[in-house]
Amino acid sequence: MKLNFAKRMSYIKASEIREILKVTEQDDVISFAGGLPAPELFPVNEINEITRIVLEEAGTKALQYTTTEGYAPLREWIAERMNNRLGTAFDKDNILITHGSQQGLDLSGKVFLDEGDVVLCESPTYLAAISALKAYGCRFIEIPTDADGMDMNVLEDVLNSTENIKLIYVIPTFQNPTGRTWSLERRRKLAELSAKYNIAVVEDNPYGELRFEGEHLPSVKSFDEAGNVLCTGSFSKIFCPGFRIGWMAGDKEIIRKYVLVKQGTDLQCNTIAQMTIAEYLKRYDIDKHIAKIIEVYRKRRDIAMKYMERYFPDTVKFTHPEGGLFTWIELPEGIPAREILEKCLEKKIAFVPGGSFFPNGNRENTLRINYSNMPEDRIEKGLQILGEVVTEYIHKSK
Image 1 (cartoon, one colour):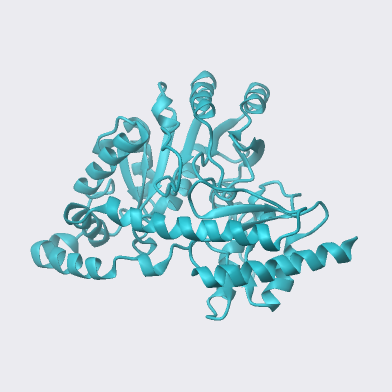
Image 2 (cartoon, helix red, strand yellow; image 1 turned 45 degrees about the vertical axis):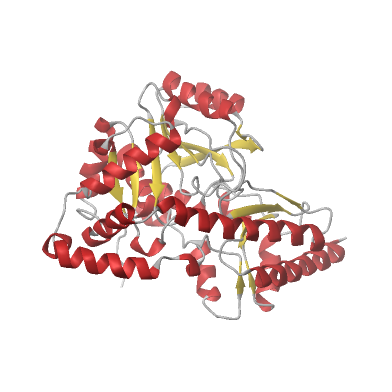
């Protein structure tokens, strides 16, 4: 049977991470692949209690449809949190509840992109953002990055010389996949360039609360005088991912456009999930919970750094993130990470090759490591084996 599919289906490829995660479901695999939170930190008992309370006190409301914008008390909490932590000036009408921040990326494609439009992004960037936006027929221009973030001089050159740019997509804090954090100066400059060239910016921030050291930085949005910057956020990394509750925040007029396209996508997010999270936030100290997460992840980050330094050859480079879930590894030129992965999977070790994080390809000597999910002893064992495989491959390639 031959059917005529939409053109966009030719742009959509299987998520490399999701395909690798199918392998990592085996208990004996040490996985550095997905951006998975540590499941032992999920507040299972508290959620059990809160769910009971929500159903007893407001069961008919919790099991009913709600507005597309989302549950008002939860939106109010998010707005206040962003104002206090990121320097924004939001109220609930600046917030749209989404199915994780990932849906915010997909809705951004619906709102902004026509076929042939251009998206500017960091090089490398989050591969699921590439997948979400590519479905709308856009093309990507990658902007080089360094330890302080996106190169603003190159960005302005591209903005000045390229037609049909509709969107700039960035992850300024604990970037996925590199773990890097933008400097204050580049955050401010991006907001200035967005206003100068009248280009929308999507500032993705799923990891910003998970800072191990250093000071919290204001968001790009906090410097946005033109109203062009939109922010995503999520409860997946600071609470638990199974609820699939995130948000899109920005200028009220733009958020109304997001509401319109969400109405045609899924009508609304899960009512009882939103009410459960809101009730938890009212009854429990989320900062205390986040502090527990940070303590565990900081320790695992430190262990990952220690054993990469011990077991990796000197020719291998890696980032030292101040927070978040990932570190980025650069192998010597000509060493393909996908072939390293094949050898590692034989030894029950998994990671994500870096090539998929470059929309236009050609960077196969890189890989991403997640350190949040595995316990400390498995991190050491897995990185020792990975280091041995890399060392052996490098020696054979000489």
